[in-house]
Image 1 (cartoon, rainbow, N blue to C red):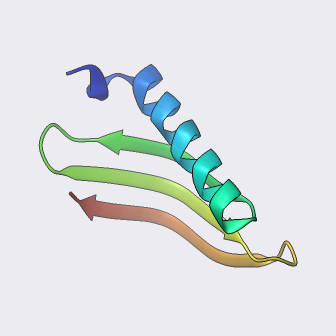
Image 2: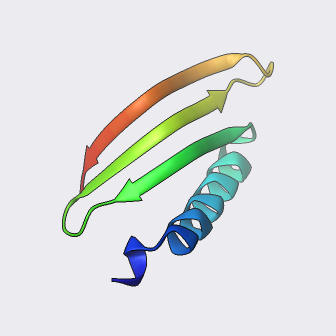
Length: 66
């Protein structure tokens, strides 16, 4: 149930994007994520830059089944 709260979701997004940015050596950002109770995450504003700081990937909205 704690995973359903906005502060916890924002905290997790911060951890994940920081880790991905470090491992990939480039900027990774996510604007918003909403985890459903059981097996789904709705993710908005996914951005990944390439090494030249240009857009490598941008997804306005992703729906992920876990």
